[in-house]
Length: 510
Image: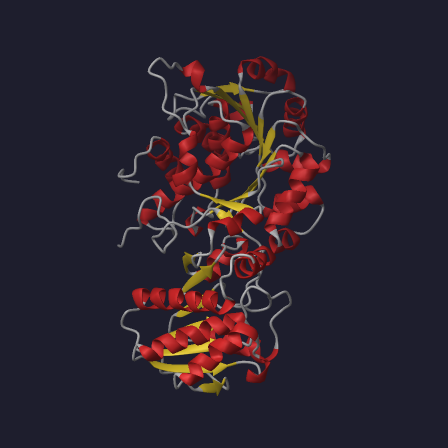
């Protein structure tokens, strides 16, 4: 079986920027480059087409028959450049036009004229050819705000039914650039080349599903242009966030590394609290105590004796444990019986740093209110309950959902899912994790994340730093574990990778 690379970068293998810009911001950057720095718009279009063509030739060197689907806007203009360069290179090119050619304006019209002057032919898009090696999606670009319909929807549906690979220019057509929402139907690209600024929609929502391999070019836009815009979000990964974990002092003892108290584990749900506790140890906490139901407290640590376990029958039993703890993680397997409710009510009033997950979030939703020093880690369903909306509403704009959660509840919010989002207080922008893989959609993975964040918090990181580093460490550990395959990956596989990654090791078997 082919093995994926440890802590793999995004599949282009290059270094992608960390700043993410909304579509309107990228349009302003584009205009500024043209109007203030004197870069002609047609020059930017030619650069975009040239970059896309280089990616095309590098990614599919044996492709000889090329079909380009062009719209009437600037995205189509980029496609005309690709078509012209491909013809000059001796490729068999068909350019299929959607929308009336007479509607093409500005730089796109100049690009179209250059293609025609070079002998290129434009065909009306009445259907897709069967005999082609590669399609180029230059239909809609980043300006789309309403659902794709009519001939456009039909063309995208037909394109998705083809076997040949697809290269999308800037963003797959039909994918919302800011939210990653599919607007009715969207192109499922094999690769995407994004220009000037990376868009959040490539990383959140359905972005990772539809974009394929991701490539980027700033098109040599002057660096001063970017000073005019505060990014909408930041892309984070373990390669960057790992720098938050400083080497340990040679004189360190376990007390210096923090004491995490994990509260949860109602009858029948002991596994969740055990996973959180063990992951806290593997992420570097010096001491971990599990406060759990008496029914299973005696045997919970039989094969992990490093975990301390205390039976808690009543909230009063927590008092001595809380006094010794530096950070409290509550929620894994907590349940919503009187037992779990009592523990949540007692912990919620404490001044300790908290990591709040699972049923503790559901109990918070029943009696909402802000907390000054907590990290909330909801999945979309829990986030919906916290805000009194539907899960679909959360998923339709994950960045907006994370912002609403942080505004309402304070502290730091980790909205889990594909492209997990970390949103803390201003002035830092929200962060989107680009590590991780579908194999992590498995029972207990969230409990592992809870333990990781709590451990990093206990080791001295501020709440938002602990959340950012914890999300990325957790995701990178999932990528490490997925070297043996995504299907069948379980939560303990993620735990097994935490130690190597948190110590900067990369060549350790999963």
